[in-house]
Picture 1 (tube, helix red, strand yellow):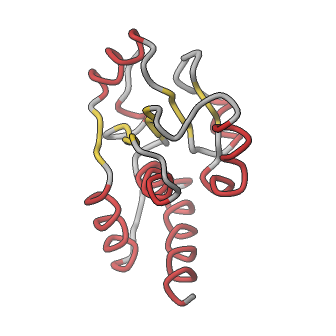
Picture 2 (picture 1 turned 90 degrees about the vertical axis):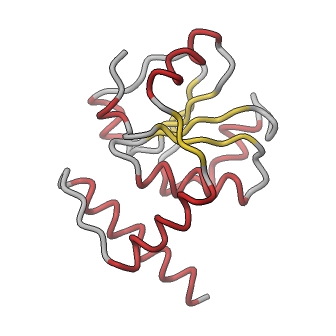
Length: 141
């Protein structure tokens, strides 16, 4: 329970930092992020473009709804699933159309939310999960 609270608190700190566009991560959050990165593979923006053209992936935008309105990656096989609701909404938004064996690539504005979300999908039994290296800010269509 203590680890769950610490993770939730760290995620709140990360999200708040991201809203200011200058992430200032606590040492605890940095440690959690390092652990998550050790479990999830990144994908370079150029590779993502290639996979998108082949339509072999599902993109998941884990930012918040107000961020979706500003900009997003244009792609037909995309799900907008705010990080804060990942565990609650994923069965309906993901498993109605896709399976846990599909390849999912998560992205956010910079990286941390997508890394934590990708780690969580792996914990929930999804087999092929990556995150966009550098986040949306490094992706040029």
